[in-house]
Length: 398
Image 1 (cartoon, rainbow, N blue to C red):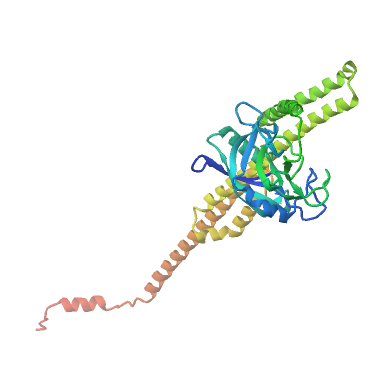
Image 2 (spheres, rainbow, N blue to C red; image 1 turned 135 degrees about the vertical axis):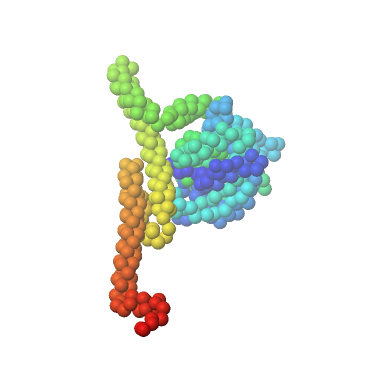
């Protein structure tokens, strides 16, 4: 799934607004390329409409009363004025933010570089705190989508003008404006962007309402399972496997068609795959945290020594730092503590060795100095006699 949210701040700025950056749509550089809705976005035509992104509302039609989980655009129908101009109505959606600017940028998605229209704006955290928390949580898991809305210019009676022939499989919007962008929790029909051409399509209001109710029930069930804790995933999978067995045992009783049972089985397996993917993503985040922890531990250990002392084990320190960054599992990182202690011991042993070497050298120098002093002393064998003679008074030989 293409995650349209590129960045979302973890802090609320002044005025209760949370900055957010969104990939609104993909620019198609190959003339044959389209999104899954059959729309080809031409860069020149998008640039002509780019100013309409400024002050464009960020919207959400909520699936719950707590206003936490966004559903779809909330389109309820359209209004026709006295001149016959149709105006779309989104009575089931609320404005939860707005865009401040937009530009065409080259971004990396799933390892591939694409050219996209990127919008920068804010979410109203004070009014929709639960929605902001939901976006932050699901942004980490790569499960947030957005869907942009376009309509025609007022000079064209709000009708979108296309370049060339218009078909369901291929059409190029030429004269249009961006009118809104909805945050979705349902899988998008387009990996890069969803577009509702509100001035060109009409919907049966009753059919739309029925579909919405069914979709809300599906979304609430899916989100409830997705937000379960990690330690409950194993039991959930076991329960799902039991459901598969139960379904297989009741095939003859229910006289269900093979296609219906296969669809039910596929749905459960998809839910299992989603759970395992969440576990994999969480494991990756945990490994990143462990890598940072081990690097901090290494820095703290060698930080006790000065640069000269650290130079003793520089190659070992550099090699260990590289090994820590290359670790892919928690088990590998757990073994790094002993290697950190080994480096610390190596530095300490070398310091002690140098101290003993210095002490031995000092001791030898002191012995040699005393020896040289003794060798240079001159012994006066008459010193005692001369001394006594000097001390006697004058002798009278008579």
